Length: 512
Image (cartoon, rainbow, N blue to C red; front, side):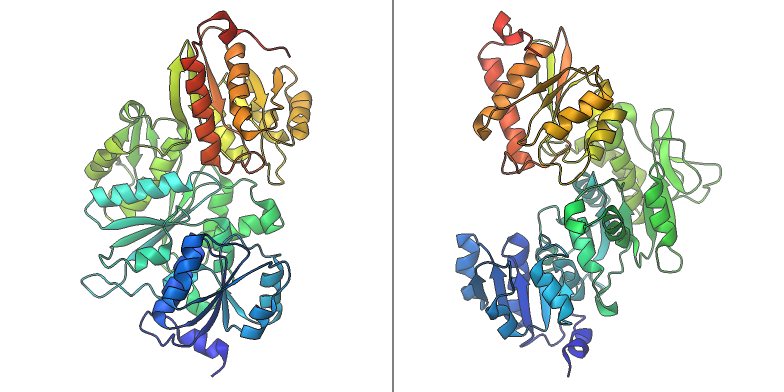
């Protein structure tokens, strides 16, 4: 039997996976979950990685997999000699990576961890013998918050649900959980979606519901172009069975739904902050309402919660309200009642580094939105805090920041620019927002960057104001992660407060 023919038969945990030669690229959390799953299935597993955490490297031979460490800048002999029937890559491997290109040119099937998980999703089934339904969530921004929200709403509605995927819990760990679930809420990155685009018919997902929250340029270096990035995101809607949720305020998501090949009967469900139509969720006079999942959609609406209630629990920023509406649409498609949604939202809290108020002191509100790693996310933060001192900059990932500065950056009272490469950010302000005072942080060591940011920002604010860390960029030029960047910002704020910020030195304006 040819490799192609054999792979076509592997659509269940109970299929015959024994001896299947699989090359797994990368030994992160995702890569290990792939190797562990395949080893349990009896496949012949070779893991190739340029580096590996000691824990994973130690466990691989225990589970029966082999590890080859070394450069992957070229196809290693260990890989070509292994002659894999399928290559399963961690999401970090871009389409232009030499090993991915080799696999494509050699006619070897390329999967991601999501496809493998879909094929073996029946390991643990529900009482009726069927596997958990999948709800898919992607978008340039808001994925993790919406994934967590959706899972929380479903659990409050009485369903066994788990957030997984790009959120940090590999889908393969979720489908192997012996407790089992009714619904898996799967956050998908554009990288994971690109790999789904390589699937044969047998590996295509058929989600219960899906959403692309928004679309803006991001990860352009990885994908090669904005169009390729957009096409990857659009795959979230493919084969959706019940509800294709889209952002009415973002035309790109509507077009994705219109162009998607879905299961007959799947509905398009819109959301935005305006008055909803008869198949939408939206906002009416301070009420979040549903006009999609009720019998009398033409003349009636169901109240889900109020902006006042969301304000009390720190969830009233406009882009967070949009995430809530999207999550509510997904949960309502699965039958969760409005009362359960309202109850769940009263106890939900955002993760750290997502428009998190870390301190209010001496008239200054300090806000950590380090998770705003692209211009689209930063724009949402700036709209939530107009007039803030904006801390911006970092690894821009090939994205031009000029449009952001021209459209929303002009509302900032000042800009404090961080990052190794700051010239393009400075130039954007000089050209598009010349009235905004700009201050550069040239501290070379990671440990000093945020202390200098706080010193500068504290000196800028006159009376009362907000300092907003919304970098519009990745963190890896100076920090280990967006979380590391946010933690260091919070620590610097606390240090500033502890030193006694109310004295003259603490609020002395910096030189422009």
